[in-house]
Amino acid sequence: MPRVYGPTIDEETRCIHYHSLNDIVAIKFKCCNKYYPCYKCHQESEGHSIIKWPKQEFDEQAILCGVCKTELTITEYVQTNTCPTCQSSFNEGCQNHYHIYFEME
Image 1 (cartoon, rainbow, N blue to C red):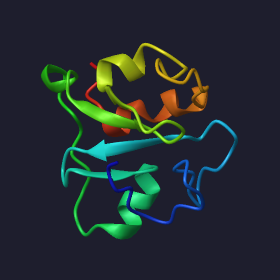
Image 2 (image 1 turned 90 degrees about the vertical axis):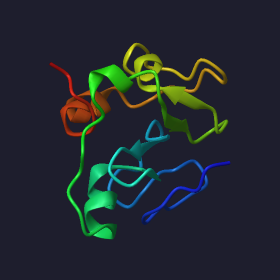
Image 3 (image 1 turned 180 degrees about the horizontal axis):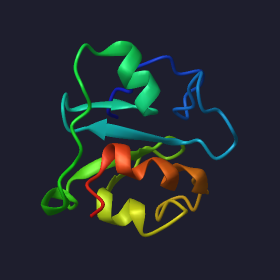
């Protein structure tokens, strides 16, 4: 299982910033190749700026389901609100932060 960095509060990748029932994904950051639960965790832990995943790399496995530990591609993740393996629901509010992690235009 990939290591998740930052101030996590449980084994399902919830963090001190986002810890609702559906906050169960970690994102591998392009800039450092490390999984973090959210951009705030990354900002507090790393000394560099976030680099967004370019569209041509959306086939990279960069999303981790905290429940079953399945790695999803970015394309798989942005096209669903549930894990395709364990059917756990993802926080739909995460879509508001896609522009931080991924080139969306």
